[in-house]
Image (cartoon, rainbow, N blue to C red; front, side, top):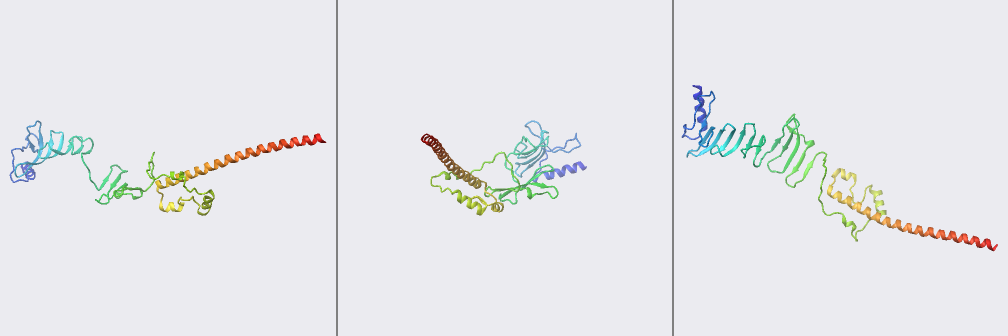
Length: 277
């Protein structure tokens, strides 16, 4: 009696239409388990619940296909939208999931928590795609640790990392470069002016002070250009210094030659004085 009542309850919930068709539903007599079975002429068998519209068209199918998959299908059992395999893999938009969750399409979420004791949270504060926050999860309250967060701004593409950044290679694209230093019209500061600036400001010209960097941070691209500018200026100073050194070396060679000539003249003069006496 209980089995009959259970069967009637399942059938009542399976068909929303007032026109119930019982020809496709059987209760297996050889098993203590209740099955709703839908016969198919395709081959094999399917077991589940088939909903129908008032006009008789198939609505949705929920059930077991050939004993290998549990499916949610639009229409009959063949147009599968969601499947669960024997191994526990779930497929959405695919009938052959290759992972525990395999989605053929886009996935939208506000919060996503990775598995494990040391898990991470992927969080969007609202549904406007303005930012994405990535941070380790705090097990106590299932919240994120802002002190170790990484934030991507969806409006301008900027990223904020609260912590250290380590990489094998970082490429920074910025224009222009500092090649303007080698232009003939470039006004190269004199070393005297540089020395005066260092004594007064305690930092190089056009380079922010340590206090400013600590307060406002450093734009890596602009800072690299400034450093390159100073290196190129230093190269020009070295080239000029090398010219001066070569000139001094030549003058020193000439002075040494003159000194040797004077020394030889003195020696000859002494000989003449000796002969005269």
